[in-house]
Image 1 (cartoon, rainbow, N blue to C red):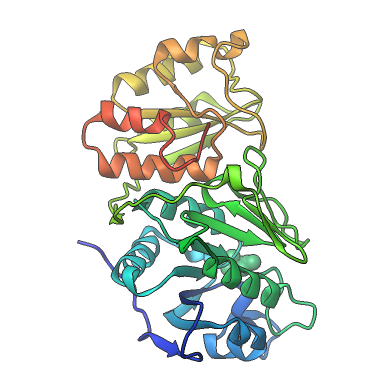
Image 2: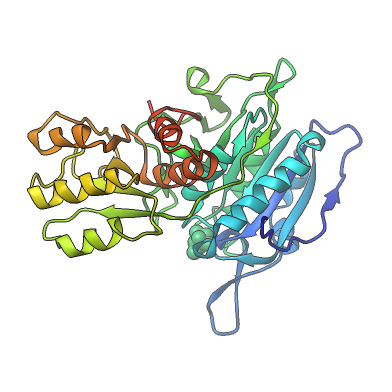
Length: 356
Ligand code: ASP
């Protein structure tokens, strides 16, 4: 049973009789739609003020519809039920729109875009996440540009078919694959990076698509996979990490899977106590996934002695996956597949272009 969050009724802005596209905007909150309160703190405001400050959004020959969270939130508050609500909102309105735009805070946008990429199986329309570093009310804000260009990309077709057929993230003139993206800057406009996969498009005077990098259109049928298992954790290694700390997480009965953020190309302290703890967790049927702390490059079990035992123990290699995609994919795999061997297979197989 899904605990759907409260959404405002859909509002249609049918501005054109013969629009080039119909786009559904799902407004969740974040800095983009924030305004200052009387104490000078940024707090979420309604979508009406957003649209008032981005008049160009109404000039794209697109008919817009908006569904807003009743309580727009800072994305630090995102939970699984928000992802489920977004996924079902897309599912419920899938046939009525050419594309979907999710306005979302930047802090957890890469997690949400990753989660939605796994939840929307068989997607063949654009789902684009965007937000802003400065509120739309601020004169130097990046909000309007991100919003307007995302709308344009979401509406674009070639030979009558959508150009984008996956979950993406648009920010600072770049369209990134959602489950390859990572927030890397909290101050500059260049907030996101996708080190292991090239941008899908760059927006300059024209929008230039990186055709070979795009997921091709396929005649798929959308299926919402909404069962995510939250009994997961991330352990980030650091020199001096105490055995008791790791043990506490690996032995916690409710924890079913752990993403281990390791050094470089997947290296771990090659100590008996550490390897024994991992071995015990695998014997207890827990999923362990090795992901690098580096933003670029990938895990290569056996390249160094410091990772050679992991394969034997049964720790899975995350290859070049991001931590954001790894933890959400683990939630998805554990939620979807009851058999641990199937969940393991899912984790090491690219399913939405999240790893090579
Ligand atoms: N704290 C904000 C959020 O993630 C930051 C942002 O939107 O950029 O909702």
